[in-house]
Image 1 (spheres, helix red, strand yellow):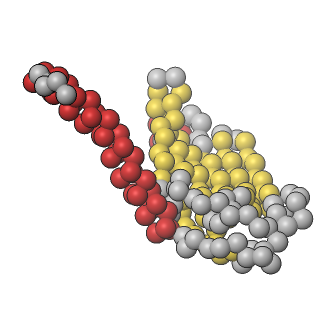
Image 2 (cartoon, helix red, strand yellow):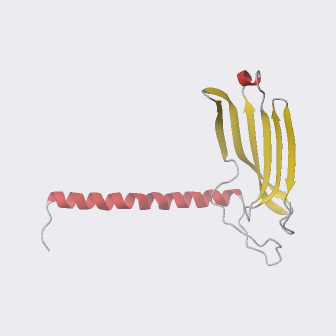
Length: 157
């Protein structure tokens, strides 16, 4: 085998290291995600007597995760919206995520147009499907309260 020059050896090592960095990154991230998912809800096997019979391994989110958004009207900041995985609760005798979304106008914008919206959804922790959705909107003089219950066993709302 011919002897490599120092430049060739350096280039070869650089290429190998650059190739290993993404592999190392994705392996460590996957381990971190798997640990976070197991902390929030106990994973369970699908029970043969379970009328729903759906299980999804959730590695996307867990209790305590929160998204915060700025609400802008043109270049003016009008308020804030948040979406949070608030709790794990028992619903329909199953563990479920309670996800709460809120949108509120700030004090300056509220003097013109007050916004106080709240939505809550109950999502099955094992199957990641909806059981319930409730939306309460208060935007200026507009009011709307809606509630939907999803019967997953009989397949209707």
